[in-house]
Structures are given as C-alpha cells and as structure tokens.
Length: 134
Image (cartoon, rainbow, N blue to C red; front, top):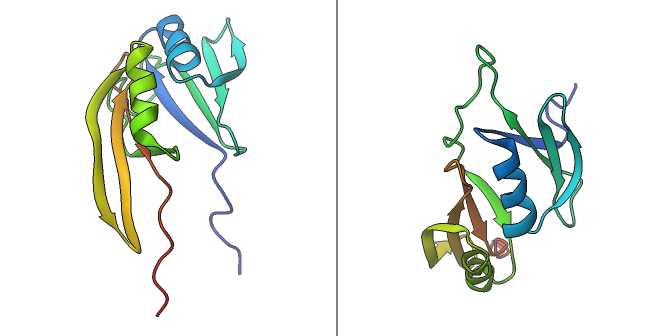
C-alpha cells in the first residue's frame, strides 16, 4: 500500500505586493530568502530547522487558491512566543492575537497570532508538550 502523504515541502501564500511582502518576511520575521524570481514575482523563504519552505507570489487572474489576506492556520514554532511577539512588534509587525496560555494534550502551550501586510495570519506557538502516557 502507498502512503498518500510523505511530508510537507512548502506552504504558499498569495500577496498583493511582492516587494512589501519580501520586506516583511525578511525584516520583520527574519526569514532567509532562498530565492526570488523577478520575472514571475515569486519569492521563497526557509524556516530554521526544517526543509519546509514558505513560497509567495501575486495571484494571477483565474489562478485559483486563496485570495491575499485569507491564509490562516499555519503554526510557526518558537520556544518563547511572548518574546517573539515583542520582537515582531518592535520590527513593525502586526499582532492579531496577544500571547495566551492554551490547554493542550499533556500541558499548557503559549500561542499568539501575527499578520503579514496583506492580513495572512500565522500562529506562533511553543511546541506541543508530550502527550501523557496511558
């Protein structure tokens, strides 16, 4: 039998202004820009500690997919989301949900949410605590 999903290679978001988005992802979130193609207006960023990349471009008419500013549910990890949020705020980023403690399996996690210039929203969370042993 074939395993339908073997991993996650990329997350893609649509943006309305690629240059504004590039500045946000480099300067506010501090991600490394792995590539940018001027002709297609596509940029790719790497996440520390994972081979998964974040790709973005301006959505072309009829392309399909989510409109700029409608992405949510992507969770980024940080050992101290409160400190990460303060640094993002200092760099001019938008905080949409202040850090809060949330009960999770095996303990409490801390989560917050931020938005890019288009309003695409990302959660910043501590790693999930280990599940209790049965």
